[in-house]
Image (cartoon, rainbow, N blue to C red; front, side):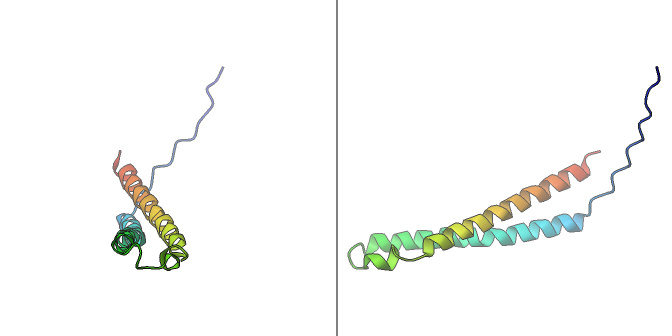
Length: 96
């Protein structure tokens, strides 16, 4: 009985630290819409609590601002995923 010959695994090529840095920068830029949305939601809710009867209901309930907030949070989730990917990429390139 013979042992099958397994070809040796090729050495891993080193990961570029520049590519990791670019991934981190793009991920941080993608976080900006979510941060802005959180700030605007806070201001928006504060305005509603200040003037509950003075602002017509259609001024804040009938708008499409909720859709914009959801889209902003989805973009920010992509930024978080990109940052996590960059850190995992950096960590796996440094392990022997």
